[in-house]
Length: 201
Image (tube, rainbow, N blue to C red; front, side, top):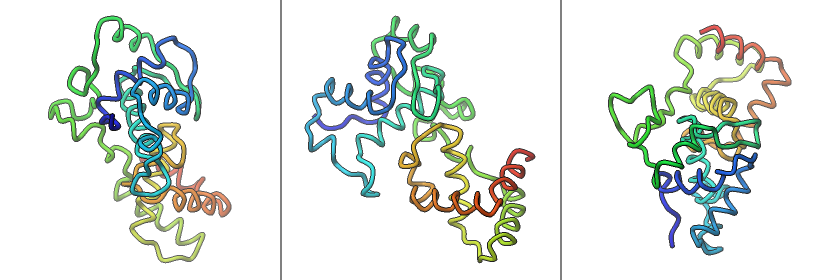
């Protein structure tokens, strides 16, 4: 069979960790591949970025949605486990989709599958960007492009979700470039100042 949609992966993902133990995403990928009878070709098919597989990306988003709904809890950057809410849901239901639970509290009035979750909740606003842009220019003497602002949004997304670098959504750009930005900003001391701006607004 082909790789299911992110929505169709929600229930089997939660089922795979129902014993309450701590898991890494690789453990769940292996379990899902077996339960879904995926072929090696399907498991290894690359996404458009040529780095991540389609299977990894969809499973990563399923994990994100389950965390958003409080069905799983992230313990650290690698490990996560099911919550009591998740266990309770499994005991009473045989399926899980976007409309059966509130997976996007900020946009629940729209009841839109496509808008959940909203990537925009990780965007820095214009005021923050005006200050951050000045910090980077002062530290690095560089012309700042729009891609830098998007990269900062990607770093915020990763930090809040405890995700692997390669799991950063394509909307934020190439994960490797984002990582290199962060390395450089840390070296110069710019990142510490950027964090202060983000936390203050």
